[in-house]
Amino acid sequence: MATKRKQMMDELKKLDLEQLKTRSTELRRKLLDVRTQKVTDKVSDVSQFKKYRREVARIETLIRKQQLAGAGQKS
Image (tube, rainbow, N blue to C red; front, side, top):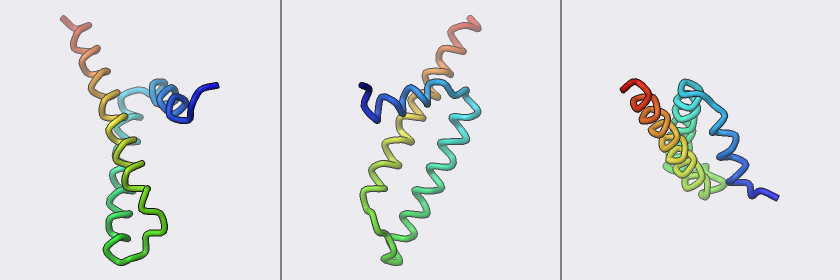
């Protein structure tokens, strides 16, 4: 049985470059919203910061891999 993180990575790997960029933008916006809520003391779950940051990092890693794979094919 795959872990939740593994399932999420498998799901992300199925997305194309534009979908990954869109997902990254959405998560960055959510992270900004959570930061704003923290300032106004309305955050119910502070672990969201870590979750969003890590998911953004995973997505950015996949984006970079796809960019490098595309550059390697053009040569």
